[in-house]
Image (cartoon, rainbow, N blue to C red; front, top):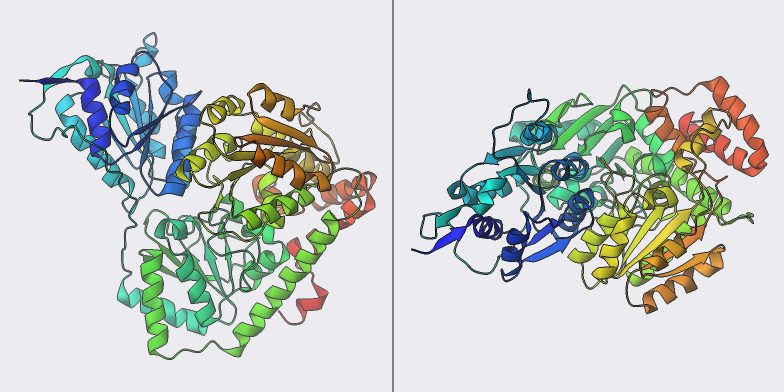
Length: 618
């Protein structure tokens, strides 16, 4: 009887589970597997320069395509290099399938010399929802099917399979039951778990919502997973509720929608801060309430808020906020249940809700005006807000996909960028937020082959995965990279300006020409220093036909005002030392009076909530 090698079984198992994309870094041990995968009709194998980037590419591909993908690596350090990418998928609940080889010998943590015998599944345990070690070929096909199923359960997230390396050299009879036949892969789509909420609990939630004087909807990544963005917007419009998003929920409510507070989370500035201080009932949809949102807790949030928290994952409910009414269920399904009850009672939003929306809309309008005026001042150098504005116009005009890298860059993009849909904007808010942009853009571009992707990144963050420019060029992907080059780690430097009187430690970078670096990889590239040069540079980048990079030399003296909100949680335990802040603001006058006043205005309007034009009405 014909026999199959372990490499053939592994390739068939991956295909049989409906996984059509595999991201990897080739090694001699993996070469037979990759050869088998590439022979399967409909299977695509993408080789990256390192394992961390491979995991991030797979994550980006899954988010855009809504299809399954796997990252496959060799053992030891190559396996461990997956961890940061897998951790990001875990934080944002992305069903990534992680696969790596391991030693044939059983794990033994006490063997100090044989360090290769660590237990990889124990390493991945905190950041995966399911794990398995495989030591038999016959178990492999079912293990992959189980892994895919587990990754999209109510505890949605990445899974990990550890394969004993010796399996690849073994052989097994082809006719054994359960072995997938040779044939084309049929990619499996991600399917949201449509779990209904308990009817009595949903009814209680509706009663509480109807009693609210200042209600607010806040949406998280769970809305993306549920594919419920349109449902949320219709619910807001139908019942007159204002809303905002968490950082992970970017795009679930378009920032330019009349009922939306603006950019995600604290990038909406005073509108967001006033809303979470004055709201009495918050309908939280698929939210984790991470540190980026101040955990939903005082002092940023009012302690009097009554939360209705809807989430598929029981581990998320009550994790940070203590909800008045917890509902275990799918966002789309539970919203439909609530709407049905409200319609059945012919509910009409009270006049106070419209007044509440008007107050928040007024704060949003004031903030937008202030931001535009500030960015358009005659600065000596290119303002980051101007870059975001110009690139945002291009994204809207050409209907591009935008990938945003970490640091101050996403704050400027959120504050100045256009309203986008959930599948148009991508940012890994959970983990690996800094430096993941290049591999993310590659994964997203592979999932959208007929669209151009724009990656907005910083000078520091772009260097994390600079070697993947070779991958981008080799695949000839239509990606335009826009580098915010302010010659500094400006998120940290800006906080040193704002809170530590300008005492800089390790935050100043040399003037590096990233256009020349990109040209070395074969990309079309330009360096620009003025706002009017941005659009022509982008047009030439598109005309080049392949990947391109635009190095934007920006002014390191600028900082996004909303960074102070981030600092309150991440650096000061939600407390800002007023003496240090006052000294820093006074010293900041050396950077320009207008910059200092802009920052003071944010402190007054957002953090202190002092808004004379609206205070009497709130």
